[in-house]
Image (cartoon, rainbow, N blue to C red):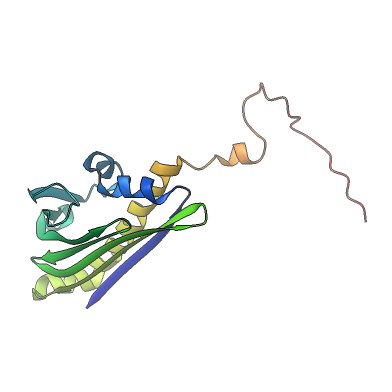
Length: 170
Protein backbone atom coordinates (compact mmCIF):
# COMPACT_ATOMS: atom_id res chain seq x y z
CA UNK A 1 0.00 0.00 0.00
CA UNK A 2 1.31 3.45 -0.92
CA UNK A 3 0.50 6.12 1.67
CA UNK A 4 0.93 9.86 1.14
CA UNK A 5 -0.06 12.34 3.82
CA UNK A 6 0.29 16.07 4.41
CA UNK A 7 -0.94 18.44 7.13
CA UNK A 8 -1.32 22.21 7.38
CA UNK A 9 -2.41 24.55 10.17
CA UNK A 10 -4.53 27.52 9.07
CA UNK A 11 -5.48 30.60 11.08
CA UNK A 12 -9.26 30.27 10.61
CA UNK A 13 -12.30 28.30 11.74
CA UNK A 14 -13.27 24.77 10.63
CA UNK A 15 -16.37 26.18 8.87
CA UNK A 16 -14.21 28.33 6.59
CA UNK A 17 -11.92 25.40 5.77
CA UNK A 18 -14.93 23.20 4.98
CA UNK A 19 -16.25 25.79 2.54
CA UNK A 20 -12.88 25.95 0.74
CA UNK A 21 -12.64 22.14 0.60
CA UNK A 22 -16.14 21.63 -0.81
CA UNK A 23 -17.02 24.62 -3.02
CA UNK A 24 -16.02 23.95 -6.64
CA UNK A 25 -15.31 27.66 -7.24
CA UNK A 26 -13.03 27.91 -4.21
CA UNK A 27 -11.40 24.52 -4.86
CA UNK A 28 -10.37 25.65 -8.33
CA UNK A 29 -8.29 28.42 -6.71
CA UNK A 30 -6.08 26.14 -4.62
CA UNK A 31 -6.18 22.70 -6.29
CA UNK A 32 -3.23 21.66 -8.39
CA UNK A 33 -3.23 22.74 -12.03
CA UNK A 34 -1.95 19.20 -12.73
CA UNK A 35 -5.29 17.74 -11.61
CA UNK A 36 -8.53 17.84 -13.60
CA UNK A 37 -11.77 17.09 -11.70
CA UNK A 38 -14.74 16.06 -13.80
CA UNK A 39 -18.16 15.58 -12.20
CA UNK A 40 -19.69 12.18 -13.01
CA UNK A 41 -22.63 12.07 -10.59
CA UNK A 42 -23.88 14.56 -7.99
CA UNK A 43 -22.35 17.74 -6.62
CA UNK A 44 -18.64 17.70 -5.89
CA UNK A 45 -17.80 16.50 -2.35
CA UNK A 46 -21.38 15.56 -1.42
CA UNK A 47 -22.19 12.09 -0.07
CA UNK A 48 -22.31 9.46 -2.86
CA UNK A 49 -21.13 11.95 -5.48
CA UNK A 50 -18.62 10.69 -8.03
CA UNK A 51 -15.99 12.64 -9.89
CA UNK A 52 -13.12 11.56 -12.09
CA UNK A 53 -9.72 12.86 -11.13
CA UNK A 54 -7.37 12.95 -14.10
CA UNK A 55 -3.67 13.72 -13.92
CA UNK A 56 -2.17 15.87 -16.67
CA UNK A 57 1.36 14.41 -16.24
CA UNK A 58 -0.08 10.95 -16.97
CA UNK A 59 -1.79 12.03 -20.18
CA UNK A 60 -5.05 12.64 -18.29
CA UNK A 61 -5.26 9.06 -17.03
CA UNK A 62 -7.68 9.08 -14.12
CA UNK A 63 -9.63 7.22 -11.46
CA UNK A 64 -13.18 7.62 -10.16
CA UNK A 65 -13.53 9.13 -6.66
CA UNK A 66 -16.78 8.34 -4.82
CA UNK A 67 -17.58 10.19 -1.59
CA UNK A 68 -18.41 7.37 0.85
CA UNK A 69 -18.37 9.36 4.11
CA UNK A 70 -19.18 13.02 4.59
CA UNK A 71 -19.69 14.95 7.80
CA UNK A 72 -18.58 18.21 9.32
CA UNK A 73 -14.84 17.77 9.57
CA UNK A 74 -14.30 14.78 7.30
CA UNK A 75 -14.64 13.56 3.73
CA UNK A 76 -13.65 10.01 2.70
CA UNK A 77 -13.53 8.97 -0.93
CA UNK A 78 -13.17 5.52 -2.46
CA UNK A 79 -10.81 5.50 -5.45
CA UNK A 80 -11.38 3.11 -8.37
CA UNK A 81 -9.37 2.95 -11.60
CA UNK A 82 -5.66 2.70 -12.47
CA UNK A 83 -4.95 3.52 -8.81
CA UNK A 84 -7.32 2.21 -6.13
CA UNK A 85 -7.72 3.00 -2.47
CA UNK A 86 -9.06 5.85 -0.34
CA UNK A 87 -8.53 9.56 0.09
CA UNK A 88 -9.26 11.36 3.35
CA UNK A 89 -9.72 15.06 3.96
CA UNK A 90 -10.05 15.89 7.67
CA UNK A 91 -10.10 19.23 9.48
CA UNK A 92 -10.49 20.19 13.12
CA UNK A 93 -10.05 23.15 15.45
CA UNK A 94 -6.81 23.53 17.36
CA UNK A 95 -7.17 26.69 19.45
CA UNK A 96 -7.77 29.58 17.04
CA UNK A 97 -6.39 27.57 14.12
CA UNK A 98 -7.73 24.69 12.04
CA UNK A 99 -5.59 21.68 11.22
CA UNK A 100 -6.17 20.13 7.78
CA UNK A 101 -5.07 16.60 6.86
CA UNK A 102 -5.00 15.09 3.38
CA UNK A 103 -4.18 11.36 3.33
CA UNK A 104 -4.22 9.06 0.32
CA UNK A 105 -3.76 5.29 0.56
CA UNK A 106 -3.68 3.42 -2.73
CA UNK A 107 -2.36 0.54 -4.82
CA UNK A 108 -1.33 0.59 -8.46
CA UNK A 109 -1.69 -2.81 -10.16
CA UNK A 110 -0.44 -1.80 -13.63
CA UNK A 111 3.30 -2.70 -13.56
CA UNK A 112 4.38 0.21 -15.81
CA UNK A 113 2.39 2.79 -13.89
CA UNK A 114 3.53 1.30 -10.57
CA UNK A 115 7.21 1.73 -11.54
CA UNK A 116 6.51 5.39 -12.37
CA UNK A 117 4.54 5.96 -9.14
CA UNK A 118 7.15 4.29 -6.92
CA UNK A 119 9.90 6.26 -8.63
CA UNK A 120 9.42 9.92 -9.45
CA UNK A 121 5.60 9.87 -9.32
CA UNK A 122 5.39 9.57 -5.54
CA UNK A 123 7.93 12.38 -5.08
CA UNK A 124 5.96 14.64 -7.45
CA UNK A 125 2.64 13.76 -5.78
CA UNK A 126 4.08 14.53 -2.31
CA UNK A 127 5.34 17.89 -3.55
CA UNK A 128 2.01 18.63 -5.22
CA UNK A 129 0.10 17.80 -2.00
CA UNK A 130 2.32 20.18 0.01
CA UNK A 131 1.90 22.95 -2.58
CA UNK A 132 -1.89 22.51 -2.63
CA UNK A 133 -2.17 22.75 1.15
CA UNK A 134 0.10 25.81 1.20
CA UNK A 135 -2.08 27.41 -1.52
CA UNK A 136 -5.15 26.61 0.57
CA UNK A 137 -3.55 28.23 3.63
CA UNK A 138 -2.49 31.35 1.69
CA UNK A 139 -5.89 31.68 0.02
CA UNK A 140 -7.62 31.65 3.42
CA UNK A 141 -5.06 33.63 5.47
CA UNK A 142 -3.74 35.89 2.73
CA UNK A 143 -0.11 36.09 1.62
CA UNK A 144 2.59 36.24 4.27
CA UNK A 145 3.95 39.69 5.07
CA UNK A 146 6.99 40.71 3.10
CA UNK A 147 10.38 40.61 4.77
CA UNK A 148 10.61 44.38 4.33
CA UNK A 149 7.35 44.92 6.23
CA UNK A 150 8.46 42.61 9.03
CA UNK A 151 11.64 44.61 9.65
CA UNK A 152 10.24 48.11 9.49
CA UNK A 153 10.89 48.88 5.84
CA UNK A 154 8.21 50.11 3.55
CA UNK A 155 7.19 53.31 1.88
CA UNK A 156 9.02 56.57 2.40
CA UNK A 157 5.92 58.02 4.10
CA UNK A 158 6.60 55.86 7.16
CA UNK A 159 6.83 57.83 10.39
CA UNK A 160 9.02 55.20 12.04
CA UNK A 161 12.71 56.14 11.96
CA UNK A 162 14.66 53.81 9.69
CA UNK A 163 17.81 53.93 11.78
CA UNK A 164 17.28 53.56 15.46
CA UNK A 165 20.01 53.01 18.01
CA UNK A 166 19.26 50.45 20.69
CA UNK A 167 21.21 50.79 23.95
CA UNK A 168 22.32 47.49 25.46
CA UNK A 169 23.52 47.34 29.04
CA UNK A 170 26.42 45.00 29.78
